[in-house]
Length: 96
Image 1 (tube, one colour):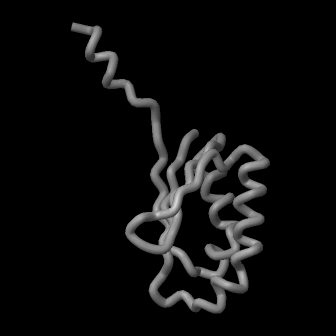
Image 2 (cartoon, rainbow, N blue to C red; image 1 turned 120 degrees about the vertical axis):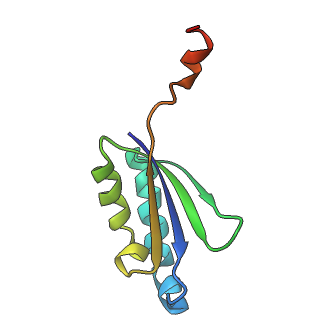
């Protein structure tokens, strides 16, 4: 299952906590690449945060991975999950 996850910084998040947890956060994401759950990561144009493309067996697996992020454990981020399914509307082009 493919899931997009948008992580944005909470306004009340302490800058010190972000600095203290930056290295463990990056290591967790790097391990996600190595394990195959993280397929891509992008920064956000509109402010601090990131968008991750995850590949997992279930949405619960994706949530488990995200909940283990150090920034998330410290409640420093807002999380938005977007579980995806195959886009099937192109079949309408040939089924008339």
